Amino acid sequence: MARTGAQRIVGLTGSMQAVFPHINPEGYTPHPLHSQERIWPETNCYVDLWIEVLAAQNLPPEAMLGFTLNQDFEGDQFTFFKVPLEDLETLYDIRVGELAIFDRVESHIAAQIARGRLCLVEMDSYFMPDTQGVGYHSEHGKTTVAINRMDTESRSLEYFHNGSFFRLTGDDFDGLFQRHLTDEDIAFLPYTEFAKFPDGKTDSAAIREKALRLLPAHFARRPAQNPIRAFIEVFPQQAEAVAERPFAFFHKYAFNTMRQLGANFELAASHLTWLRPDEAFATAAEHAVRIAEVAKATQFQLARAVTRKRFDPLAAALIPAADAWDHMMEALGRELGAPADRTVVSESREDA
Image 1 (cartoon, helix red, strand yellow):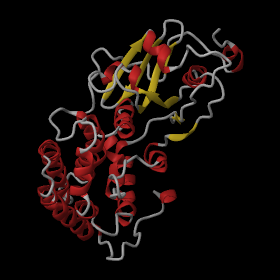
Image 2 (spheres, rainbow, N blue to C red; image 1 turned 90 degrees about the vertical axis):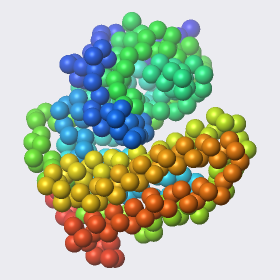
Image 3 (cartoon, helix red, strand yellow; image 1 turned 180 degrees about the vertical axis):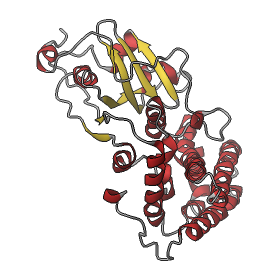
């Protein structure tokens, strides 16, 4: 027997409400940061959905990307980069917090949509049609979506995910929300955030000025040592271990190394170019693009190495990217007048 208590506790509704009523999956145009002409058209689920959520409000997502300067090599992967929540508040006056889940997930989502709040929910990509060919009905995987519309009666959901905006219905809706479970079953309760948006409009020029004031703080938090050189030291050994696993594991490894590295720095280049259209950061942006290009080429070399069991050439493949990281940080340091000891020279976030 399906659980029904949620209707009494948090007000489950079947009406098709929306946080942003003006958008629909049909005819939806992704932001240029997700153009297929880019080196890395998609980055990771969290940053990608924020790009589209901000664009849906006519806000510049390029402004939030200063955090890309902080990416490090974490020993087994490159940082899964995410926009800091305090930056979203500083730049756009968007406040994000954790939403406690103690009842049916869809009930909480319905309550928040009714209040104009967007829920960011960890979901199982097995039930998401936009992952066709990757995870849809073939592999269970964790990913984050932002839910704009939901109708529990018609079992319909519209959501931001990766580089676009999608709809799912029917059995996939039931699967996402584990609607086959009863009150006696132990359900998986996903980590969920909810975003509160300001009532008024935010001035784009003011956003740019705030982003410029945040940049030195992000620069000061860059890794103390070149993260790409740190990765080079273990890359061939990691690739050799990957080759011993089923080939499907290759895609997971490549996502968390080459894609996170390359996509991160392509976004960094977009951020710098947007920040200073007068080309003050042009040199640093060019080096960031170089990192993205080398990472993409190395991903293809990695696939060949895993197939052919030849791993030694992989270390040399990333040297141009490591050099570009050094040159990028040197160029930024000159423009920002940043000291060598990486002392924070920006205003505080409260003043930004």
